[in-house]
Amino acid sequence: MLDTTEIFGLNEGGVAQDSSGDRSRWIALVVLCTGMLMIVLDVTIVNVALPSIQADLKFSQAGLAWVVNAYLIAFGGLLLLAGRLGDLAGRRNIFLAGLGVFTAASLLCGLAQTQWMLVGARFVQGIGGAFTSAVILGMIVMLFPEPRDMARAIGVYAFVASAGGAVGLLAGGILTQLINWHWIFFVNIPIGVATALLTVRVIPRDRGSGLGGGTDVAGALLITGAMMLTVFTIVKPAAEDGWLAARTLAFGGVSLALLAGFIGRQRAARNPLMPLRVLAARNIAGANLIQLLSVAGMFGMFFLGSLYLRLVLGYSPLRIGLAFLPVTVMMGTLSVRYTERISERFGARATLIAGLVLIAGALALFTQASPGGGYATRILPVTLLMGTGAGLAFPALMTVAMAGATPADAGVASGLVNTTAQVGGALGLAVLATVSAGRTSTLAARGLSVPDALTGGYHLAFWIAAGLVAAAIAAAGVMLRPQRGEAR
Image (cartoon, rainbow, N blue to C red; front, side):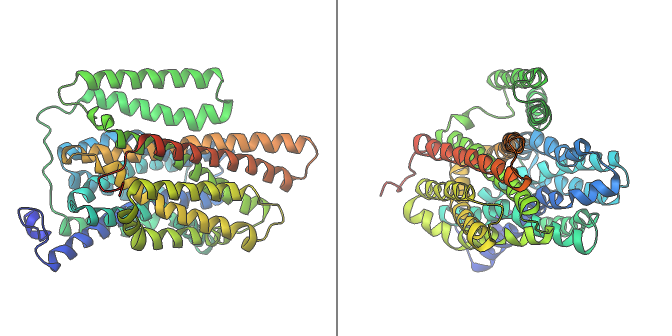
C-alpha cells in the first residue's frame, strides 16, 4: 500500500508537491462523492416508484410507508455510531464495509417478491447507507487540509448530497416508466462495485485511533436506540395518531430517557462514543441546529411539491423529475464553481445566511401556487430560487460544521451533521405532511373542490417550512461566530 504522502503528493508539511498528486486527491473526492450520490439517490428514487411497488406487491397504504420508514430508521439511527467507528477503526474500512452492505441489500431489494423481503432489505440498506455516508465528510477534511481546497471539495460534496434528491426523482421516473421498479435498486449494484474497487485503488488506508482503548459499547447502544426510536416516533405514532397522543408521548419519553442516559454516559466514559467537546464548539453546535431546521423545511418542499405536481397538476413521474431539474442545475453550478469563491470573499457565515434567505423566499413563493398555475410562472421561479439558495447555503454550512472539528473527531463530526440532516428530514416530513393533510380535510369539509383543498393544505405546509428556515437564519445570526478574516 502506498504511503499517504506519496499517493496524495504531499510533503511532511502537507503542501502539494506536484500536479499529479493533487489530481489524485480530486480523483479520490470523485470516488467518495459517487458513493454519496448512490446513497442520496436511494432516498428519493423510491418515492416515484411507490405506486408501482404498491400495485405489484399488494401493499396497503400503511404498509407502503414502511418501504421508506424501514430505511430511514436504520439510516438515521446508526449515523453517529458509524462516524465514531470510522475514527476508531479507520474511515476507509467503514466506508468499504458500508458499500458492501448497501450493494448487497440493493440486490435483495431488486429481487424482492414479497412485502416482508422488501421491507427487511430496505432496513439492511439503511445500515449500509449509514456506514457509507457517515465517514465521507471526515475523509474529505483529511484529504484537503488547506482551507481553500477544503471549501472547494466540501462544495462538491454538498452539491452531491443536496442535489442528489432532485436527481433521484428524475432517475426514478425514467427507470419506473421505461423498465420497472426493480431497476431503481439494481442500478446501485454496478455503481457500488465500481466505487469499492476505485476506493481500494485511490484512497489510502487510514489506521484510526484503535479499538484497544474501548469503544463505549454502552454509549453506542444508548444513542443508537435513542436515534432509532426518535425517528420511529416521528414517522409512525406521531404521523398516525398525532403529537399529543398517548402512544407518541410514551415513545417520545423513552427516547428522551435514552438520550439523557447517553449524555450521562459520555460524561463518565474514558473513551466516549461522542466526546461532548465536539458540541462545546459553538460553531459546530450552531451548524447542526441550522442543518436540522433547514433540512426540515426543504425536505417537505420536495415531498409535498411532488404531490402537488402529481395530484393537482397531473404531472407524470418523469415530468415531476424534469420539473425539479433546475434545482439541481443551479446547485451544481454554484456549489462546484462559485460558492467557494463567494465564501472566501464574504465568509462562510455570510454566504450561509444569504443562501438561507433565498430558500425561505422560495418556500414563501411556493405558497402562491394555484390549481391552474402554469410551470413557467408558478414552479420555475421557485426551483431557480431554491437551487440558488441551496447552492450557496449547504457548502458553507458543511464548511462551518467541519471547520471546528479536530482530526481525531472528524468522523464523529461528520456523522453528527448527517444525523441532524436525517432527523430533520423525518421531522419535517412528519410535521408538514400531517399539517397539510389536516388542512386539506378541513377545506374539503367546507365544500372546496379536491384540487383547491389539496392546494390549500400545501400552502399551509409551505408557510411552516418557510418559518423553519427563518428559524435557521436566526440561529445562524445568533450562534455562529465569524471565522478568522470574515469580519473584513
